[in-house]
Amino acid sequence: MELSTKTPRIEVVDALRGFAVMAILLVHNLEHFIFPVYPESSPEWLTILDAGVFNATFSLLAGKSYAIFALLFGFTFYIQSHNQQLKGKDFGYRFLWRMILLAGFATLNAAFFPAGDVLLLFVVVSLVLFIVRKWSDKAILITAILFSLQPIEWFHYIMSLFNPAYTLPDLNVGAMYAEVAEYTKAGNFWDFLIGNVTLGQKASLFWAIGAGRFLFGLYIGRKELFVTTESHLKFWMKALIIAAISFAPLYSLKEQIMQSDSSLIQQTVGTAFDMWQKFAFTIVLVASFVLLYQKDQFKKTVSNLRFYGKMSLTNYISQSILGAIIYFPFGFYLAPYCGYTLSLIIGIILFLAQVRFCKWWLSKHKQGPLETIWHKW
View 1 (cartoon, rainbow, N blue to C red):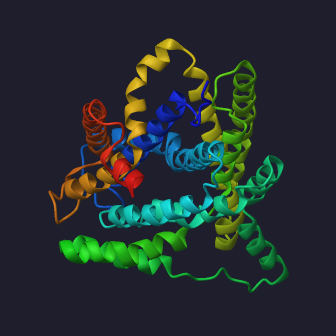
View 2: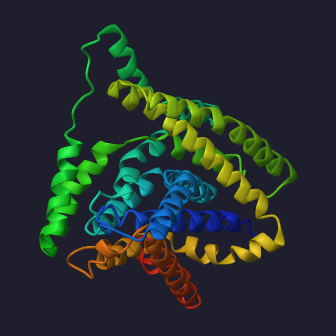
């Protein structure tokens, strides 16, 4: 009898990844793919509806979708590493080559996404996964918690307590994004592509770097917590309860801190509490999804997300290209005519179209087109 040399695919992970990419698509549509041009005036009823759509979508999904994406990135690293380990191989160096290739895909996506691309951030931070790949589970969990405590933000805050004149390092992000906005509005396609790949990527990387969620994903993979067992379902139930209880006070504290007169406190302590409340809500979403997925009716309802999640790279990059064509001056330039409600409807239509394409493509191929290229290279 031949032993299996590959971990079987876990359905709930594909569906959860599909949910994350769908959420990113909907949020980016409301943001016009980081191109803040909207109708100058709207009927009162539409203005009220737009406000409701914006608040609901951003409260539920913004900041959480990328957190889920990062969590599953770390989980996927474990699956691939474990599969190679079963064959007696070290996946680490092959993983670095995969990250070099991912940087190429990140550049393609960034060409159409003015704010820079999160995939390049994943490439940079993923070096941490390479470093810790042979560490113990306990060491990885402790490191993940330390990263999630936002030590850099607390360092800046503590320095300000000892030196009232202390200021945060100025990375000039605001000026860079202002320049990005200028060439985007100008509507020159080639200036747009070149600017996004260079200045836009630089602004994005300077804006945020973190690694805690990748390591939590690696830890979840090692503990096989996405594999359905009674003990694992109990873990997700406990995680749901703890995260749900933690979210309200963390959110309340974040709101109070953001009302401080000190911009330094807002940008340090406020950022830390903002990350914590978003992570707590992310755990609520993930745990709820995993638990609900055990119900046949829910599994059937979200079944399309599995196809969508299997082609996450293709869908993520193609949504940026489609969004740029729909909203930006070099394309249809619909941004000035689309408020939040109409933008959400466009996002839902794009999602349904992508799902239809995924189901058709996967009926003929094992992987999505970009996934196939990445795998072969």
